[in-house]
Amino acid sequence: MAASLIDGKVIAADLRARVAVEVARMKRDHGLTPGLAVVLIGNDPASEVYVRNKHKQTQAAGMASFEHMLPADVAQADVLALIAELNANPAVHGILVQLPLPKGLDTEAVIAAIDPAKDVDGLHPHNAGRLAGGLPALSPCTPLGCIILTKSVHASLEGMDAIVIGRSNLVGRPLVQLLLNENATVTIAHSRSRDLPDLCRRADLVYAAVGRAEMVRGDWLKPGATVIDVGITRVPAAEGKTRLIGDVAFNEAMQVAGAVTPVPGGVGQMTVACLLVNTLRAACAIRGLPAPGV
Ligand code: NAP
Image (cartoon, rainbow, N blue to C red; front, top):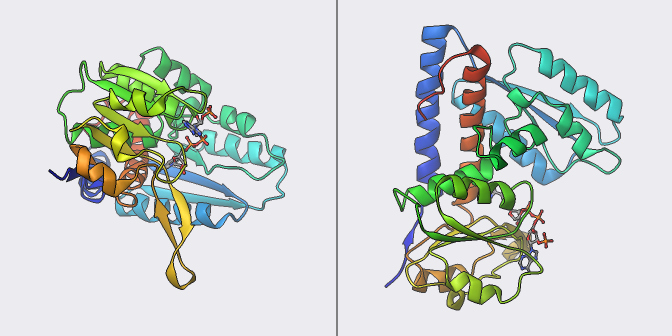
């Protein structure tokens, strides 16, 4: 039987709508407009598209959106000065520096300069450490989106066997921590893992975050598994265009799995929606208000 499709578009739209309701309530009851500042350095075309999208969706949710565009050859000191300014700006509750940074800039130092309370990307060592310690933290948006998508299929992940393929700071590692918080049993796989197909076949929940098109085949999957495809690879398509392909061989997975996210239209949709959630959470925490119910 064919797997069901996990529709990231619909789930993200629902989440954004719930964020917008909470933002309206914050404005009405507390005079608080959550604000997100996005810093884009250089002119990487993919990053420009992401930033435009974030700006549009932030405004659509009723939040304030601040964009800062810096040239690729900007000095590290100027980037740090901008971050210090945003840290001090009371209208800004979330700061996101679009990665990757151009060569010559120290990514770790830039992330470390962000006030952890405004670190809506969840990449500051303070938040990463809290997450690893099982403490409340601002967590990276893509892994948060993966958990929400999984929970659209399974109300509880307790005791389920999960595999996370990929161990980056952006996706794999925080996803592992979030799964542990959900009481799943987690295997972490990476480029040195042995017998990856075999490890995968044991999992009820498969998360592929590698960046290798269609690496995970249908016969790697346990029948009925839930498959969350984080990977994005851009490949040439007809008429000089390009298209996006995930880490999972989608048609094969649909024959074996229980539920699968498509690429595009799956995890990618959730990342920005979760960024809005994090900005709302940060704004409430900074103002000393209870966490919002989204
Ligand atoms: P990354 O930093 O390049 O990490 C890739 C991970 O995959 C590494 O841990 C690497 O292992 C592992 N890996 C590489 N080859 C492998 C193999 N043959 N078998 C098993 N594991 C292997 O990438 P990332 O930033 O985590 O992103 C992963 C993918 O997700 C990319 O396609 C990216 O575009 C996509 N992404 C999507 C979103 C979204 O919103 N949808 C957001 C972020 C990222 P080692 O650690 O051993 O090198």
